[in-house]
Image (cartoon, rainbow over all chains, first blue to last red; front, side):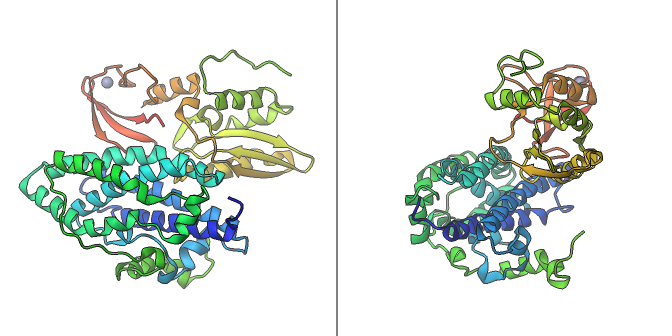
Amino acid sequence: MSEISSEQIKEYVLRLADDAVVQGHRLSEWCSHGPFLEEDLALTNVALDFIGRARMFYAYAAKLADDGSTEDSFAYTRDCREFTNLLIHELPRGDFAFTCVRQYLVDEYSLRFMEELCNSEDPTLAAIAAKAIKESRYHLRRSRDWMLRLGDGTAESNRRMQEALNELWGYTHELFEADRFELSLANAGVAVDPSLLRNEWLTAVSTTCEEATLSLPTENWSVRGGREGIHTEHLGHLLSDLQFLQRAYPGLEW
Amino acid sequence: MATPTKLISAIPDEEYQRRLRRANSPRPDLWLKLDAVTDPEIPVVSIWDLGVLQDVEISDEDIVVTITPTYSGCPAMESIEQDIIKCLSTSGLKIRVRSRLAPAWSTSWISDDARQALKTYGIAPPSQAGEALCCPRCGSTELRTISEFGSTACKALFQCLSCHEPFDHFKPF
Ligand SMILES: [Zn+2]
């Protein structure tokens, strides 16, 4: 681990923080738009877990940066190109089916990812992961349940779930791609090599889809770019909402 | 070394250490004072009973209180922090509240007294191994899940099929 600099760990931590804040923000958009009250609360509770996760990562990145950066400056004052989240997180929330399918795909990934990150030689990353695992287990239980209820539900719910799955599938490949930077950190025992998670993820997703009477998409297009800061057109709109207050009134506190 | 105040069996080691820190503290009065600080969402349980309060260290110029977050996004943590500072403000020392992530908070640290207090308050405490979840009002085990996430992330919403009352269940975590 000695050859890894704190600047490199910071870059890695920001990736994980961006994933969590963007996912959390998309979920938070459901606040008061949920299909029924209990579901509204569940969505916003899961959102809160992701935003909490983002805060822990950003706070750690700020500590590593040691240049006056704060969790807020990372979240509120960086522009699109500086965000390095994976693209699947930034796609608009869509209908309830789309949100459920994305959450399920992300939860299956997140749980395995955090289980691995728990073994990181970086003690802070391992501690954050240990907290996140416990939350992810609950998230997955809920999102998997929705896959089954809506996939194996009415003709209309099945159609919407299948459409969402088809639309999201091309964005799942990026979850398992590691660039040279991530691999070098993984080799040093700090980061997770996500390619190692793929088989298990695919097995779990296939089993759920079969049970939910959904078919795994066969089209083989895939989109990538998030880790390089190349995003879909949706991230800018998300940030304009997320960052508005700090952009209009810099440094505002309440 | 002082002996712990009561014999505790079968608790996780980190929880045993936490109780020792309190039992062996040179300033038991500070811990006692902090028993007045509760989770704003569950006002019947102190942050000590909840396992959030981890340590109280005192030096000549300041008091450092260590807490551990329950859920990562739990909005109660900030208000707990402010309550701690307010609670100890009469000491005349600078109060610092430090948050520690590891070991990760667990519902297995919740004391038996607190479990009873939760029940009386109408919240089913986190189920322990081999124990069936039951309605905090009538004790029935005939239940249905309304939602995996209740009024806060730490709770799930259930309904009792015997007395028909809905209730929160503090999820094992
Ligand atoms: Zn009952």
